[in-house]
Length: 117
Length: 113
Image (cartoon, rainbow over all chains, first blue to last red; front, side, top):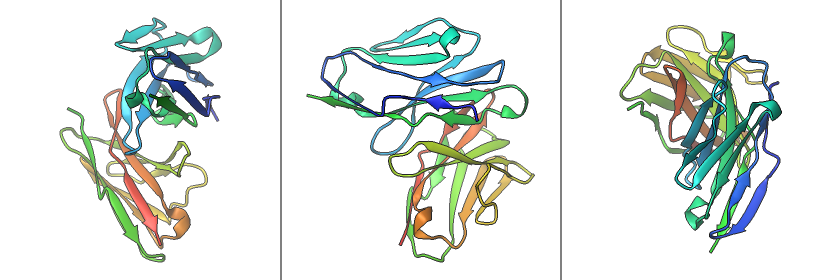
């Protein structure tokens, strides 16, 4: 199986701290997508980012930034100046594009982020 | 655009009964939909791929006779949990393929008593 590993099960920070969530993936696909989703207690998945395997540029969106390193198969997610509302479970996922992969997502086990006031 | 809805959002049923969950693409046509299951404090696991007009493809370990999937139209896929048992209690989430990505529904929380 092509796994997605999120080694951090739980992280607890104090508001305004920066926090990085790690994600390492395995893939046999030549082209693939990587994703980050946020899942608040309500359960609904909130899409954060999708990155194509061809595009290794880092991305910043407000307080969120992503570091894609193909050489180490990592796609880490950093929240700067964390806020209480950032508390949630964050999932990293990958989807193959080629052949029969058909955009099925494989998720990591998730990282529970708690931001304390 | 590309909104997916699920109905019901929550359902409680008695052991031994069957329950149907609907997944609809509201503003687009979806030839392919996916069903995921998430047990408490665990990750999402793909159960099956639902293809309009053909049989669903189930992931290894998922009982196709227990989890019946019907994708009869381009906007609706249904998952029926037959003879539900307490161990089937879970959060069921569908997603629909939109061009080159998938968009997720809000999920259905099933509790079997």
